Image 1 (cartoon, rainbow, N blue to C red):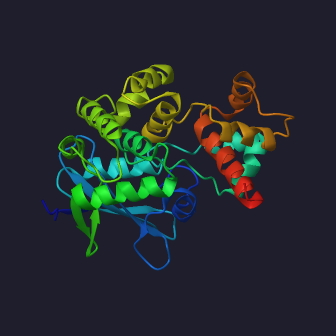
Image 2 (cartoon, helix red, strand yellow; image 1 turned 180 degrees about the vertical axis):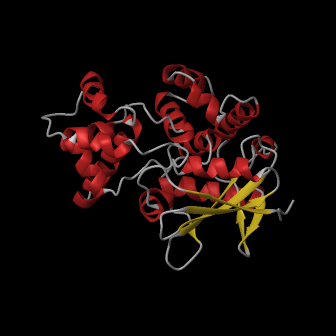
Length: 298
């Protein structure tokens, strides 16, 4: 079905926020104007009855404006788009963390108070991790793009047609997917069923204790500790949690001038000062370490 309904919304970010900066670091979205201050994202809306496209722009006064195209309730799609950008979270207290911890304060200024950018949903996060397993990042992205163009819902926004990733309903109808082996297809079907059952609902996962959320996601076929953390932290978008990946720990080592990467206990102790934005601070550390490695060519 070609979507035609249109709605507009606006939001004043709570705390510092730069859409251009977010897109530069994480998004890679289609830009909808020459100045790069407007992006377009398309996704199946949680509830899985339709897809939406959302054009988001940051005005000169910092206000975020949006146009929503698609069937269904535009407010639901708008909230989902805001969650992708971590704009559904009150960030007014984020600068205070940097004032209390000079290391984080320096990283906040360096990265213009970068916030995490999430997957469109935990469902899409889980699919992305399964598809990309043992592939290069660009290969995984190309497969997902082809799936969206072939089997996702098309939505017209601003005169252009964009494609959302296939909904769980549609994914269950796909017996074969070009570039995806049979085992991964089985895993994707399990993810689709979990999404339809509400297991991967973003608000539900956010509302669970992190350990319980991770344990539930790990029950999915092919989802181990690393993927589970990605689904919960980068899919659901838990704000106050500490990741356990090598890149972030290395970033803590360099940022805090430690002789070696911190143990989980040492990391947790350092991150106490980051509450209630431990995941946001972890993203700053991770981004800095990634940039350091790219600059070093490693």
